[in-house]
Length: 233
Image 1 (spheres, rainbow, N blue to C red):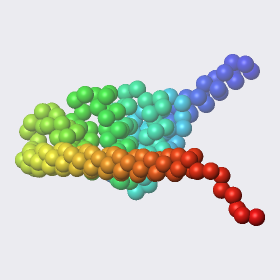
Image 2 (spheres, one colour):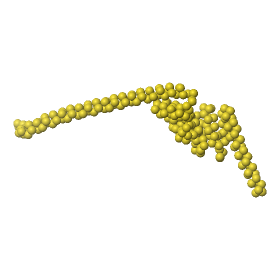
Image 3 (tube, rainbow, N blue to C red):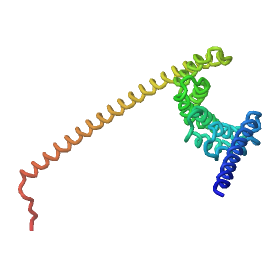
Image 4 (cartoon, rainbow, N blue to C red):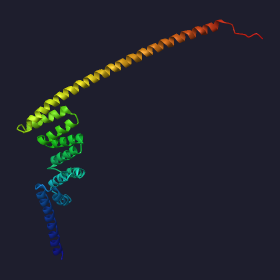
């Protein structure tokens, strides 16, 4: 009986493994055939199994992304990151894409930065981080990322467009720096003018106080010279 039960247990585990493999492989096939709605249920099943292929998290998150389920996509990418090793940069990258679509460009730039930290030659992450930085008005950072993208992808068909954009951003950054310097100079001038006015008013009040003290002292001494005032009875 013990041997029979052992065989049954082995068969059960083997069947479960085949079922998981089938879920992942079929989900992957449907994903690659651009059928996210059909692939998602199979990938949902695959990610619940121990020993899941990391790509299941990537594929499932992208399926949700393609279906417009942004919050679910973000949740899947974050969960996948908890145990990811080989596909960590892809999970960070796609989480950044979700944040871009949600209008959270600062968070998106951070996620693309995490992907770059994993792979310093991740050209697409540099490009999308540059775009996110433009939206947060970090023009200097965007220019650096665009230049790095072109270094990594020198034959990119987007090169003319990116180079034109770099020129515009550099002029914008220079204008922003000039305006900031002018604003700071005006602030300092206004502060100096306020301080001068305060000092002038303080000096004026001190003079008034000195004058009041002098008159008061004179009155006191006048009172000191006189005899005590007596009323006739």
